[in-house]
Image (cartoon, rainbow, N blue to C red; front, top):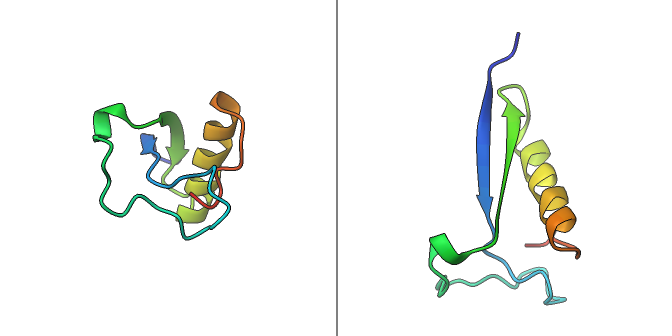
Length: 69
């Protein structure tokens, strides 16, 4: 059986900005105030799979395209 763990992903980018390079480089929003999602991941999941899951969870809780962010 694969080990699983909890992932908490906090939004750093600006998904409403059409530029996929749009990130809050100086991170003006404190971590505790950023939009976050939490989910379970497997130790066998790739980073891409974890990021895709985070984007999907952001879209579920706050509709929009979160893949660039």
